[in-house]
Amino acid sequence: MRRLCAQLTLAALVIPAVVRGDNPRQAFIDTPDACYQTERQDGEIIYLKVIGTCSGKPGRAVISGDRQRVKVFVGGKFWNEQQPQSLGVPEVAAVLDSANRMTGTIKIPANIAEHDMKHVAEQLDAYYRSPEFQGRLKSETERITGELFGNASARFYPDSKTQAHGKLGNDERVYLFISSAMPLQTVRNYAASVARLSDPNVTLVIRGFVEGMTKIQPTISFIASVLQRDASCNPAGGECEMLPVGLAVDPLLFRRYGIDRVPTVVYVRGIKADDAALSEGDSKNTSIAENHTVYGDASLEYLLEQIQRETGSRTLADLLTASTRKN
View (cartoon, rainbow, N blue to C red):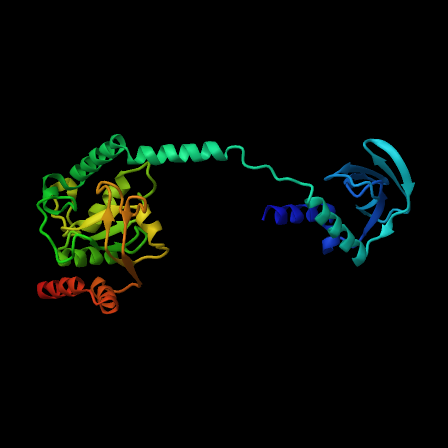
């Protein structure tokens, strides 16, 4: 790949825009070696420079204009005076061949920072998994949860130990991937559907923080507007009742399942996590046996029915039956 890049670069250098059809007035001159190419042109004065390794064989260089005679300088010293010759297809082929030969003598240097970059990446990964970072992450999660849900968080926050067990097994998940760019009412409808399923292993997932990580309030406002049971309720005027729905901000889940459009439903079986505090989108921490994906702007129940028919999952069937009874 590096050799191909070098060939293309050299070809671009030795065959100027004129040869590619931008200007028909092109010519070539003789050079003392194939490694010399035109550095710059000042009227009838041509200055040559070395590109690649010299082979001791005469070469040619491309110049612009229709000068009858030109003076050629090599290394700043006058070399000779000659008459430029017209540039035709054979000459272009010769130049390309020369560029191809020179690529064999050019070595593209390795990234000198590659080792340091790898070391920094390993340090970041270790820090992400460290008890210190996970403790701070948990603390911040609890703080945001308290700001958003107040004393009611124990009733619906996805990590709550008091939440009832659902129909899905402990190694099963249903992720409903959404975006703040979707119509708010559509997202609210999905949240209501998740609430009807009453299963802690069914989760809404957004890719990242609304308006970036530097601003937490837009994300809090978005989550509140999605999960408020009464859309007209104003949190500033008092506590608003929230839907018992888990909503995760997790770009790793988006990456792991290749989510490039929303809404999307992913059903996963056989989840095994080394550390429950880490993201289930982290393949180094969590393994899965199988997953099934359905795209489309349809009801959650309909999308789950498609997956249930494909997988024959008994637990999904029970989940849908329980949801139907509540409607």
